[in-house]
Amino acid sequence: MAQRGFQIVSAYQHEGLNLPKRSTLSSAGYDLEAAVSAVIPPKNFTVIPTGLKAYMEPDEVLLIYSRSSLFEKKRLILTNSVGVIDHDYYDNPDNEGHIRVMLYNLGDLPAVISKGERLVQAVFTKFLIADNDRKTGKIRTGGFGSTGS
Image 1: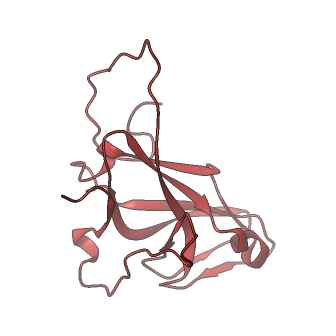
Image 2: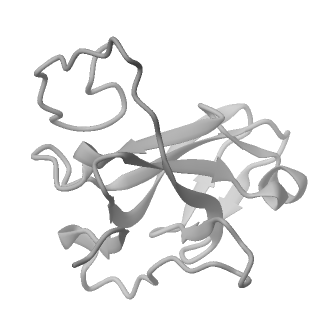
């Protein structure tokens, strides 16, 4: 039975995307690549699609971190510092669980992103629930603020 992993979303099935992989045997993170080429203007942000979705166990989360070279080479940062992909984001009705990353260009020159360029790393991990936790009953419908303001 599959526990966790990545799949290509239906809109990108025929785009020649690579499933994420770890760079070394001891790497915690899976490198996610840009599904399209893009140019991020100076002092501006752009949402870059990965063409991927992630499935995992209900008590797991996928954390998205900027690759260390992203700022050094291109002056790009992940706008929310760490992205959080919850278990129920997978196959949600709004966007199929498509993982997209919002990057901000702190540099003075446009930042060029090439299709297939490794942008972020994704780490699966378990999480804990507080003793007094109460389920809200809400159903996820999408991403980027879909669980409330």
